[in-house]
Length: 510
Image (tube, rainbow, N blue to C red):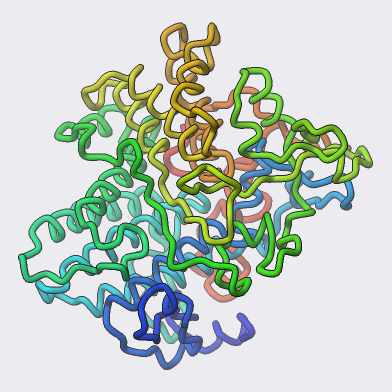
């Protein structure tokens, strides 16, 4: 359906498309069966819309084009030399037509969770579904704010005949989302014994509501740590975390990951990242397998710090049998055989090569532990920062299936290297954030991007070497999409054009 015609129908901002499950055969099949008509949403039990909504969130995170630019900007990936350089990547010449899936698909997903919450209502037996919907609403809004700053929130999901949707400030959305997380935790914690378990329709935690509480509190921690430098600031974050302990957050071995039954049956049923970067369902190169290659910045970091994860993130180059990176923005005519391809990161129980059925990891355990390590180091929560830091690194090795991961991580973090060894580091926040950056490669480049904007680490992150590039740093944000500038222009705030991406900051940036 043409997106322009959709907006002219004066639908609610996010009701352009409501992906809900129609099949009653079970989530492993039904999560991919969707209703495409935006004007006749189907009423279905909460358990079916839960599966679909979570699946769509995974697609938002890992789908084609949604996070690829961040993997490029953050020094993980680059364009292969066999392709003409894209000005969007190498000169940062973004327009309001670039990466719009991060906005439009996010609001579609928010409508999924709004439907789920409306379906659950205030029925005590549906408390778990209501709580999950509220948590995931906060999750998606956090992503929108981190990429765009202000956004429609208060009335965004209500039908509006004039298609006029006011914007809320990023700080307001964050505050309301954190309050929503708190309410969701209270709802789930106070659910009666008659409350229905989502069971296998919960394609993230399989109906284990204790894990949802950990996820919710980790998401809150993530949003609070964004604001250490601005927003509520150091004192505000410390106060907000005063009652929390490490036991409140996702810990070792507990990755928050989604899997609705990914398989190689068709491209649409593959893990979305695997289809994008590795192979399609018949074994041909995926959507961008041949386009992206290893970024020399990332490759050199892993090599210079004796980091065995380089071969988990990248394939050895065909010509040399070793991991080789390409300088970001290079104009050298290097063949794909000379530069390492991107490996389809994910995990399996054996740490073997990744498959189309692998999980889509939303918040890995290592990310939660790095957040905790920083919070401990700053005095926000009690704990041993050094121990938590080392555990975070070990969890990254575990998730990637590094051989003898625990032992390898111990050797790695005991080097006489200030960027790997917390004990010898004289700037412990830098060491924590640098190792978090090293672990977030492919899994969560938005987290790395946010840390760079918040703290300036990695401090030597390069800009494109492409001739004619005048940028002294990577952009701070995305411009508002064409759908907003065309149909909701009277409400779009200043600072969101393609000319503002190097100067307009997200509210939590210093």
